[in-house]
Length: 459
Image (tube, rainbow, N blue to C red):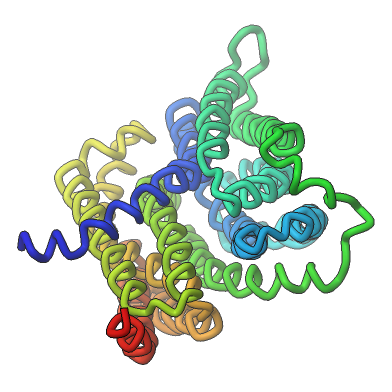
């Protein structure tokens, strides 16, 4: 074991040093939804909590589409910075900002003119739908400032500056929680707004984050050399397509997974209001660990990209395997926390004993899928760094929409196992994605691994 640890120790250190700030920053997006659930669960009641679950299930798809597209900027900026092509970095920022603002507007319009009408025809509780509509409208509007924030965040991270976005995310969540409690409960003379209050707090929080991140990048001397070519006139089709070529497959990968979980929430909504609220409680907790694993995935993508670009496939494999070790260890710990804390953790979000009883059982299932969830997202990151995005996109579609959700529907609805049956389907989908992505990585890395042997022998 000691020799095993020493073999991978340098890779553990490099991966964690790169990933930890990204993990905290990624976690910020989930904490916004988590804080919304906590505030609503304690101050607005079970119906409003079920409405949050419904809205999040519908909103997550456009959210990950927008964020996935914005991720296309980081590797391009990193590559051009390595070539000391500072002018190109500024041009890419111009195009990414335009593309992300346009994406945000299109996604908002799609929600406003599409999802707002669809929500009334999903066989959900009328009381839940009535609460959900104003919250969905405010949340969808917050997409635009969120994608502006993400543009400057991805630009800074592409140049190696990860801590600033982390700090802004932390303070943004503090603001969101303070405003959310104030608006929902009705403090300082403000009329209680109920679920609309967390919608307003999220919108305000994301506007502040976008402004602060933009000011940091545009005013900091660090980026002065890069921003000389940052201008509207430098927006062009070629660079836009460069960003989309990377960002679109990433967006689809996240979309297939998140939409499957969203579809599961809608299925559970047809089973019952309490079950839907319990699903939201358990998913809010599981989403936090997923976003931490997603941060590890981003670090894995950068390291595997560096080694793949250098043709060092031996170190690439060692680095990738070390990331699998890290995420397995982390998710094993969270699985134990979910198992032994299953009766206590739901109290963070709600005090409804019926909801807590169901959520506690769901957390046992969540403990099982922690390992699969972590390894599949790290597998996606490693393959993305190696330039392999198309086959993993197909794997995610197969795992979640051909295996996971249909099995969940069969077990949960047709065979009347209920909310637990739907979750069994999700576990099977995650396991399928995890195994197939590791097989894909294993095949590609072993195919290329021997290419570095002559170089090592020569040295």
